[in-house]
Image 1: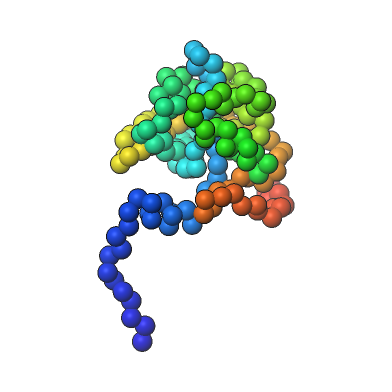
Image 2: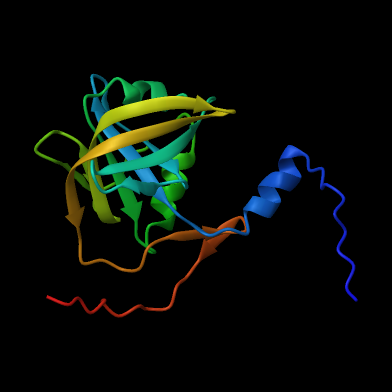
Amino acid sequence: MTVIDETPLVLGPEDYRKVMGHIPTSVSIITATTEAGPAGMTVGTFTSVSLEPRLVAFYVDLGSTTWPVIAEADYFGINVLGSQSREMCRAFSRRGQDRFAGVAWEPSHRGVPMLDGATVTVECAPYRVDRIGDHLHVVGEVLDLVKRDAEEPLIFLRGGFVDLPSIPPMMVNE
C-alpha cells in the first residue's frame, strides 16, 4: 500500500517561484503610447478570460515602474511573442534603457505599438484592475486582434525558453 505524506509543504518565495516555473507560459509584451513615447513591458501571465464580453488579462508586479505609465494610456496592446523573439523579450524585461531601440513596430489606428515579432497582437481598452497579493490583475476589453503568419509562440519554462515542434495549422470546419 502506498502511503501519501499529507504534511503541508512550506515554501519560501524562491522555492515557490522554482516550482511554479515548471508550468509553461507564453511570453507577451504589453505596449502603449504615452506622452513620452512608446512604453512596453514583458509579462508571462497573459490569458483569455471571457468571450462575452471579450476580455483578456495579465498580472503585473506591484514593483513595476512601467505599468503606471502604461496604465495612463487610453488603450494598450498585448503582443504575444513568436519563438524568434527571445532577445526582444529580454530587452523589454530590462530596466533603465530604451526598450524600443532597434525594435520594429508600427502603431495601430489607435496608436498602440504593434511589435513585428508578435504572432498575435490584442488591442484593448482598460476594463478593470484589482490588487491581488503582490500583483495587479489587469483585465482588458478586446477591441481588435491582429494575427500574423509567424513562427510558433515563445514559451518560457523552468527559467528558460523552449522550442516547440512545428505545429501544422488547425483544420477548421466551415
